[in-house]
Length: 593
Image (cartoon, rainbow, N blue to C red):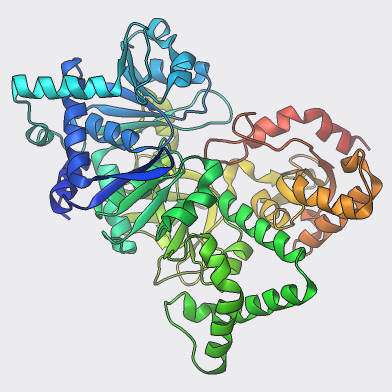
């Protein structure tokens, strides 16, 4: 693939796969798809429509919407003009959106529906450069400065007919070093920073990804992670389109399991939270099955574990192990595989550490999760496991074209065409993360093993230093805790304290089932029997950690942390500082004794 810009990649695919189906939305209960040719026509019309509004190269256009084919079309239209897509998480509140639009000098915003419009309509008066909205669901609005998506398409058709504007020819004026997108990092404190990613940044990551893992027109993606985030945008959007694959947009986060059964994807990208929930549901069901089914299940898992070295190399064991594996597949694994559609080649995991135990569990059922690593600022992939080289508990090896080294203090440094241009209008913040030799300082602590696989220990800023001087990485401990079917979420506390503690959000469905069996019905989380249950669970989860790392005290938190309530980022990572501030009184009481 010789293209150097995303626009060149786009038209290459439109021509090569013209009659193949490309993007799918579920409309009125049925999946409806557009061909690559139809996507190309839609993008040209939208781009011409934007041009008729005065949009030119370098202008900033925001997209504020959940995933859909129109999100993809808007993105290709904006970048095809040499304008800059500013991605905005639809879950953000108005003050955050206002900051992003002001900081980026956004001129127009594609908004999903009337609800998003109502939330952001004040931008017209609050943001100096802001001119108006494009309403993506075509709902009616009498507000000034609001254009329906279909109306923009019609404007584009008229403009193209009257002027002869040629988007493909215009695309030839775009260079690889031109700014493609601004993605604002979801910081836990202070204002977010706009990472400037160029065409070269994203194209290099797409090409390196294709070298690492083969993807083609036979692949089917199910997209549900926010396209506002660079991980889904690169892997499930640009990479899928460049390979001629089909992309289905999940109806919502809540329907992912149902949509997997309908779409039967071959590839799916996700964050560890999905796999954790899948694991918890499977284990909970097994624990409630009759004893004989439980015995068969765990027998099958043991057989799968023995067969895993063959399975991860796309081979099958022979002899008695091969016979037992076939039986295990028939009795157990086929049912698990059917839940994810039955033809999955692999899951991709990123955005946060994946528990080694969960990766190994699914691998034993011949469901491969390939964990990778990267950041918004690195477009995003730095390293990844591949179909040929898999090692659970690591984030794989550096991808082609990316250099990685470990600093003396353990921080991971990276250099390559994938590293961002810098933070928008913030040279000071840029100089703090990109040094004079162009090494990007990730803020993560890690190490290479003797085979060249990279292992992430934790975020540098998350490392806990106890009052006794012990350094503790909380992520492995948190991953261990959530393996319990009774623990939904957790964070480890202990910085500058004399022992380690934890805040734990229980999995209430499992706790309520347990409580029903015990005859408990009131104030369950404060009942001594419940506290004892969690003490036993925590002790079991901590058995492989050093004594100074072991959780000595914990507090059960009744309300699950979420994006809406502010404790999770849009990619479902816990905002540690936000949680610590919110539950400061609870934490202080744990240490008061």
